[in-house]
Amino acid sequence: MAAFMNRFSWSASRGKLFKGCPRAYWLRYYGSWKGWERNAHAGRRIAYRIGKMTGMARWRGSIVHDTIEWASGRISKKLPVTLDAMKERARSDMKRGWRQSRDGLWVSDPKRNVNLAEHYYTGDTEDIQDWARNAQRGINDSLDRWWDLGWPEVLERLGIDDWVELEGRSTVQFRGVETYVQPDLAYWRDGVLMVVDWKTGKPREADRVQILIYVVWAIKELGVPMAKIRTQLVYLLEGHEKTSAVTTAELREFAEALWADIELVRASLSHVERNEARARDFPKTTDKDECARCDFRQLCYGAGDAPGPALAKDPPMIEEPESWPSA
Image (tube, rainbow, N blue to C red; front, side):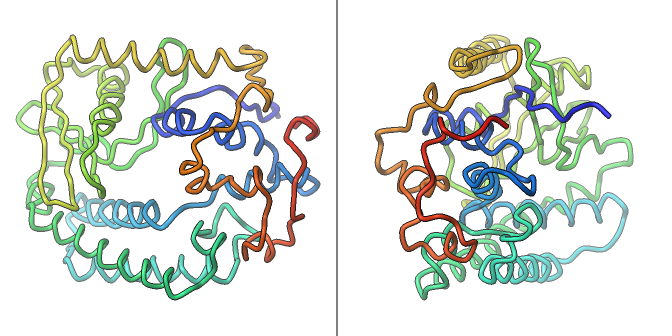
């Protein structure tokens, strides 16, 4: 069996993490490598666990996406779906994940159990419980918007050959670099490929950048001409959509910016071909606000009195990553 290799790849989320803090990027994609092994160094084990962590806002978004995927899948099979059923499913998923996080089931299996950063660093406080109630309301509101925007009717009208992709995780080769893409939905409408991204936050410039990599995927992997592609950003928090065509100039500008981001990270690698990286070449950010939000702050500043590290019986401090054994 071939050895499991840590190969260089790219995604929109990787670019965002690197720009926020190069050290967090290193911990997520290099320091965590082989942290799942039984005898892993404590630093790598913790980095792997934290790499599987989520935060309340991200968790809320993933539940909305999962619920819409479930409903869309049923519609594609001509099975009944109601808004109440969607909300009940989302509520059940949230209750199950909340228990996993609160009870520390992630200690033994961080890959298959929810670990909320809020629980990990703060505990099951009244404030955290209020956040959870707000998240539940946000989930229900997003599902209401999806329903009110008429998406069940849109999907019900699709023929079997009109469905192209539904939350499928794919890759596209971008100038020789494997790039991950996960369009929420792609479907044919009147001879045009509609590429959809559900958004559970407020509109940002980065939203357009993210969906353009899906356009590259549609062109290269599906062979669809750019002129026959439209992007749909659906903002569920505000209940509106933005449908756009893509121009050659826009796609060229996006491709050059994407390649510049990739090259910036590769320039920090100690060996590009072997995808090797040293922690000292990925410095910590000096933005303390970024540190305060970072899932990996335990590995930079110690566990302190955080309940999660105590539950996992982590050492109070981990030595600097430069001294960690090679993975």
